[in-house]
Image (cartoon, rainbow, N blue to C red; front, side, top):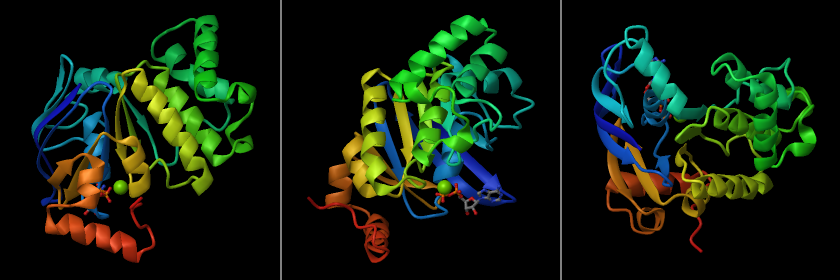
Length: 254
Ligand SMILES: Nc1ncnc2c1ncn2[C@@H]1O[C@H](COP(=O)(O)OP(=O)(O)O)[C@@H](O)[C@H]1O
Ligand SMILES: [Mg+2]
């Protein structure tokens, strides 16, 4: 469970997150949507201590993160990062390590797990994301979708309670999106909390149980995706969905 309370963040005096409060429960998939620049990526990074903030708090279980620089918050940031995994838009895999090596890295070097145990765990995780046959491949030999699944397996290797994904469909071919939905649905069934930033409304509709619309650093609307997408209450949500339509990213109406 992640609980965010009155979280605010400024860049050079400009407010980019403005009093965000939200809770993300186990087995819940929340889609964070909204216009570009609304603060989605910044909020995601604040949720696992990658980004310091100015006011408010982030609580994950018994660990609480307050305002201030990461260095000053050292141990708390560390604890929260272990509990909340992050899958970056560009994956950031280690280029000189195989798929299995990437997944083993953190358990061995951060957790101090023995190599044999880490290898076993890594193999199981690669199987879970459907990549058993690619264990020995280097990132440059993997497709974008495969690299993303290695990044997900690598995040899972720290046994997090929650996984944060920033625009996971942005670098995928459209026909690969369904596979990602299936994989994330399996993780949700395991009880993981998933918070997913996306601009693909069909993806959000299929996957998420709740949708938060972020605009100007505030949550302007929230609810089940079907409700938000089919009958948005806030005029800015309507405008945002309308803009999507103009850009050819029409939310599915089926
Ligand atoms: N490192 C940074 N320095 C200054 N401003 C930033 C930085 N990162 C993001 N911003 C600003 O914060 C606002 C929110 O950005 P972001 O969280 O990336 O939005 P989104 O992911 O919704 O597109 C934007 O106005 C952006 O320009
Ligand atoms: Mg973003």
